[in-house]
Amino acid sequence: MIGPCPHPLGLERVTAYLLGELDDADQHDLEQHLLGCASCTSAAEGVQALTASLAALLPPVISAGDLQRLRGKGMRILETEIRPGDDAEALFAADLDLMVHRLVTGPGDDERIDVEILGEAPDPLLRLEAVPRDPSTGAVYIACQRHYRDLGFPDHVRFRLVAVRGESRRILGEYGVRHRWAL
Amino acid sequence: MTATPEDDATLARRIVGGAAHDAEAELSRRFAPRIRLYGIRHLRSEDAAADLVQEVLVIVLTALRQGRVDDLSIVDRFVLGTCRNVVAGWRRGERRRDRLASELMVAVPAGLASAPARADALRLMGCMDQLDSRERSVLVLTYFEERSADEIGGSLGLSPGNVRVIRHRALQHVKDCVDTGAA
Image (cartoon, rainbow over the protein chains, first blue to last red):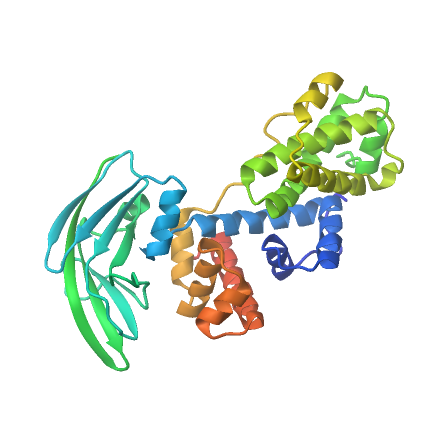
């Protein structure tokens, strides 16, 4: 069919289809509709492009498993170990896909770990709550991405790790990184 | 006055006999995104989906030229059936496009299977920041970590149905935000 669809597919159903959540009969009906409907195909393509973008969008803090998976996909990653109190230099070279700052801290049984990103001012530029932590070493992996330089972050940033248990907040360490960017 | 576009069945009828190259090109242009979506869902790879588009179009155009499609009014169902057969054949290890294309001199226009443009990463990050932490977690776990609704529900203490509701709401917010540039 060309032109507007009298029975457009909803976002929820298209999403479920693309994730493989529909049962066989529902999937069959939906595929039959899509193959005959340019309008719904176009809408579904938009949803697929959006979810593909989400799949490619790395969170700023990743787990050890994520890091392993990204290496497995062939991404060129520079991993830098940073200890509490360090002020490290990091060059995002032109041939890199990703820099990972491994913030070293010991394992702990805290309820959650937050990361605060600070510039020169004492107040955080950004606070990330309940970030993943390497279960064996306790390390936190910051996935530093090339497009971050366009987000307005200063080149010199500090990452503050905060352990949270109930109402109590305890600073585990501050980690400075001076970024340089090669285009 | 703008001419009314021919429907799929009319284009298919014109292809029978093999002389209507404009009809073949138009039918290919219409069906390519529909076949590509089917391929994304079943093959989980944009490259494989692009290959599927080429192979299915070669088979469909060849069958139309040779008058082997019984009911031209539902050519979309023939295309869907071909998609299924090709994917099933690939799973059995069969590949035959190159041989078919060279024997039957069917040329599928290049560039039909390209993926639509992805959302701008910076805008998408801004839109993700507008979500509450649970919505953001559900999207990251679904699309970046490729976890099922059952698995996410287990991690976050939610039912799979709740996960789907949160996912739908979050995706709708992100889609609206990306579409309107509200980040």
